[in-house]
Image (cartoon, rainbow, N blue to C red; front, top):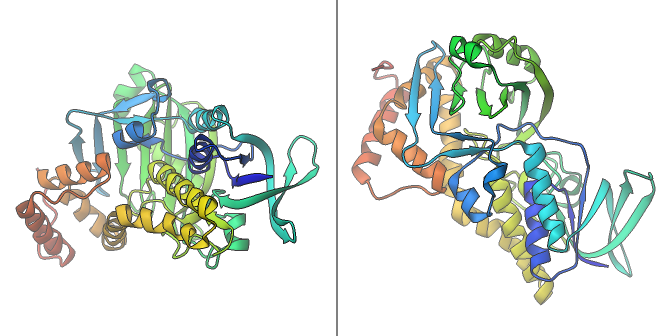
Length: 396
């Protein structure tokens, strides 16, 4: 008998499991071993601080972001007084699972099958990876943190089968040596974000350093796009086509939070299963862990009080803090990602120092900065002029 059964051992599930175990509850965490999610691996300072991430997991420290337009012109945005950490998901996720287990969560390895209910209560049925045997474990609450195509969400939560998503694909390559890096204009302290319809017709491509490795990939919502071909083209464009390929990964990345995260009874969603990946940027690790934390908070309140209404607390807490940022980013994606002309204008707009400062303050600290109303007004006017085509993209 568990108090909570967490399905999924990624950043969201592992965070929920750890928090609940720290609270003295009996927790199981079920994960499919061996799966590595495609991910750029960027974590901002707030994540490092809020979730006590040790420095040894950070394989690169990024101090510059380069935005590249469809015509190849670039804007470098320098990070003053800090850095964005880069992690390898294989090691990062395993560390979080180990930490949850260290605090008392029971680690289970296998595949979620279904939730069953009878006179004895709620049961999670799962298949053991090692033996193939089916297990049926009783629990008081289920937390579905099993990704964008969550089996828990589809079966248990209204609307859980209708999450819009981008298909992301990347290749982990060996980082180029100095000679190749110089020829390719590769900088191990810089992330490159490529807004080019030849790479992605509706999202972007990326080249993210990971110390000894690098992540190169792209994403799209459009069916029929050859993700491997686009990534190969991006590697050639970046001068990294000859680097050794370590592994290839692809997965759906949700871009809209679900309207409902619980079933009003005994199931709660977290992370990708709840749709909490930021629009426009596709950033997911911080929001997954924040989602896991609020899920744990809501689940603990439900377990302590028996009131099912407490399960709704998770979504309310998350959207209260992050809903406005998600709305702004969704509007930005809808406005600027629809054509190369719009993408050219978007990168041009990023030349503005106020845009750079406000954008990075929001990214690094996960809050909208409201202390500079004149800067907001100026950005709003520039944004409107670009969207209406009243000005041409300008470059310094």
